[in-house]
Length: 151
Image (cartoon, rainbow, N blue to C red; front, top):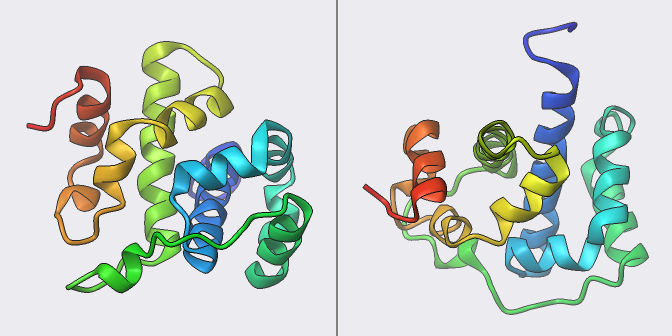
């Protein structure tokens, strides 16, 4: 480990941040971006995140939008937000923590946990910037995922 966190955790942070960035640029739900990118591209992003992270995020997102033919949608949680909007980096951190918790609790690989996280009802709650759920304690978000209820 070099730096403040494990390298693969930082790679996951970048992967989640890029998913959010692409979703915002193309006005899609995060799960739709995960599905359109597909497992192969997500594994590539995760494996090469340290390289992609050193490049301009617009360049990286353009590459994956074009490569996987991400279409423009109608979901715009940024425009719908009534309050301050968290950055794609902020949301990358929220999803990173959730995914690591899922992987740990369910004893599954990180990429499998990523797909579960983005396809859960919790993802819709996280992406509602008019609620306070996305900045709730990471353990509460994980518990909502694991137990199917928001407390």
